[in-house]
Amino acid sequence: MPFVKRAVLSLVWAERVIFFAIGVLLFLGALALLKESAVVLFKMYVGGGLAATAYGSKFLDVVLLVLMIVELAYTVILSLRGSVLQAEPFLIVGLIAVIRRMLVITVGEVGGHGESVAASIPELAILTGVVVVFVGSIVMLRVRPAHEHPFPDDDPLAHDSGAL
Image (cartoon, rainbow, N blue to C red; front, side, top):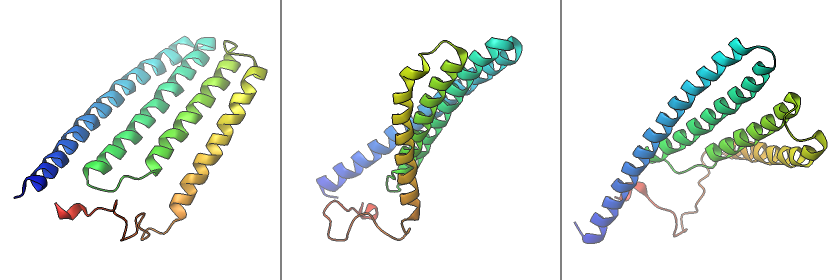
């Protein structure tokens, strides 16, 4: 086996080991955050009143963070399977992050411990625009025919994963 081919094969395996380790860490982090969300949910039920609003905001924040981590872990799993890296999972993570920020702003205003409504309107308008762009991008990706390959055959960046 030529040296270059062995070197490339070694790098591919190193990449897979690193992706595997990242996937394990992401799932462990998601499990830890799920435990935290259960604790917050319990405090929300026991606290009642204004405490329920404060804990409700924290609960939403933690659960949406878990969703973001799981989407990233899904992307890592796709990479381990040898699939081509796709943009849609990253767009979904971004969409969840933007919605998470919008919820934190609005719940903070409802709870009375956030900025004034007037100060957060520009940020909410920008975040709304970002949501529209992300959703539009996801729709465009899903409408594109599945057989359409992102690289033309004569593209030097196109690679054949079966060549190794």
